[in-house]
Length: 182
Image 1 (cartoon, rainbow, N blue to C red):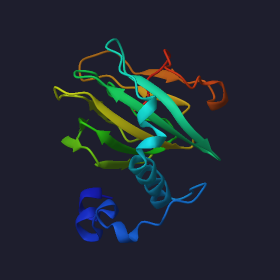
Image 2: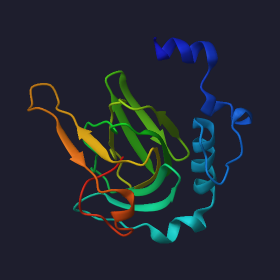
Image 3: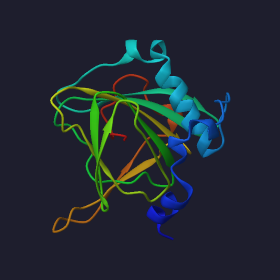
């Protein structure tokens, strides 16, 4: 099935706000996870005071958990990136809160400015990079909670690496030094 054709026929649900349902306490559908991300993004008091910037590696903080999902806050200084990866068995919603990020996939490159959202299913391979000259902040919702992030090789490089993440209840709420999420 060609998703580009599907989008041409049905349109992008993220561009039709009246189709999105208001966020529920515990979302269970793609539209509800998008709504959750939008409601958190709109309420800066939930996340702004937590943001930190780290020149050595991307900073991230698990902002919230619920039944079967996690919400992560990330900051990106210029030049930081995720590397080519997927999200194991997790689906996700990526929302740019401030600044700009670049998403690279096998289909091409997409600039993501503040307010932009991307929805992806398990097996979706991408790389996210801050190619701008200013820091960026993003919000990531994963369902089920992120447990692995396979890092994939670029053409002509070595085999893939699987980063295993600790179970959600063991992941520190402050800056993590283990595996990056995106």
